[in-house]
Length: 78
Image (cartoon, rainbow, N blue to C red; front, side):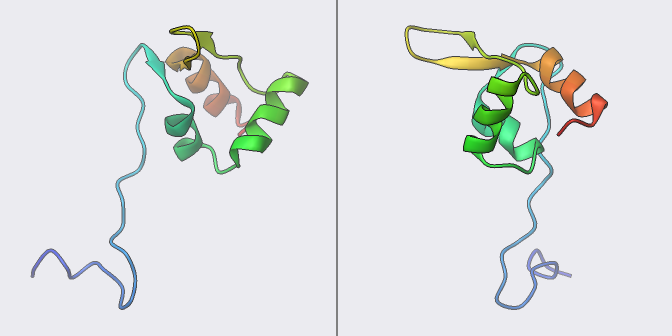
């Protein structure tokens, strides 16, 4: 058995599921790996109050609290 046995013909190798750190902040790209929606749909959901708001981590950079994302996933809103 070699490393390529799990790759379908003409396909790409399976990727590991996205995981969250125990605590801290994550960027939107990591959040969208866990929630199967587009970036624009996530922003629209934020405007409606469905998804958490980011926190500032710099003058332009934003990130999301891991605790807020875990709560979102547990509620099944995503």
